[in-house]
Image (tube, helix red, strand yellow):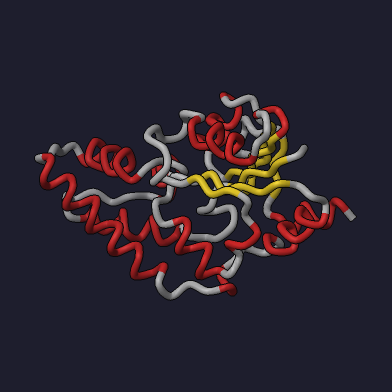
Length: 210
């Protein structure tokens, strides 16, 4: 493989817990309790689509103005958690894996639905590892559409088949497969059943490569 494309949330850093807390607050406004099980369906999904799912689960509809206000408020709540992040929040093994990829001259890209990807990478102190960054500001179609990964491969100057995607979400795995890329699931093999391979984290991958 000539290129690695990483999702952000749940792969490089565990911001998924921050999304969960922020979405849970929105759901509670409508008498809906977001569970960890339902939250799995929000991973890798855009803010707009995630909010629509929550409103559907709650059985409510809102005006477009209210919808926009809820999405903005959720993001502001999420960012209050993000502001406190630093290098200690990087998931185990990630930095060592990025360094190893650089040594092997493998191109590195980010392919994330998050519109906050760049400031998060800066706070983590690892933005310099990435040759290309594609986030929610750069694409119009959310995962499982493959647009984010196809765009990342183009920015790296690579064909889709030369890239492997690291993902923690079912929607992300599906998007990568639709792009014709190899998929590595980060998380549970019971959840990421469609991934080519699944590891608990990058520390496990590094152990296996020794």
